[in-house]
Image (cartoon, rainbow, N blue to C red; front, side, top):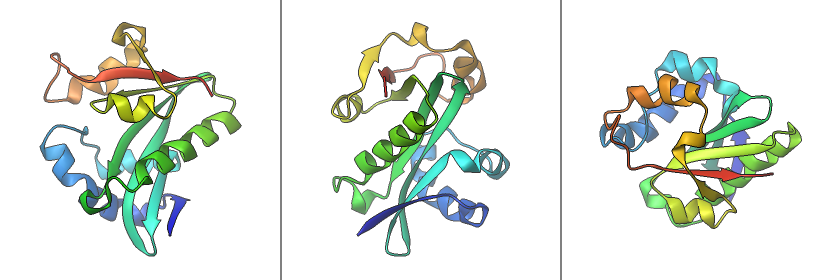
Length: 152
């Protein structure tokens, strides 16, 4: 049975191990241990028993705008609904915080569309997203990610 829990500081090492291959391939941006620690409250982790099998973060950009980011599922656990469960947990959190818009940048357009997200132009994203995160990406400025938005 999959359970979802808020992250704890002592789980950062396990989180970094899980995401390592996706960072190396350029699918997910690297985040330092310090950056994860600073934002630890934004992360929700998925467990199968005691095993960490995935996580994602709800990063708040403004009073009415947040982002689903750093979504990672262990390779052997993909296709089991864990990613959808994580995103739903984050969307519930966004709704409880009264956030009006949740966006994501992704290569998995249909995955997010199946959860109610709609494609938007990247130009509609906040400038701080581009300069704070995207500039760190090895694909910047030629990016194939798709911007999508959800209205809780």
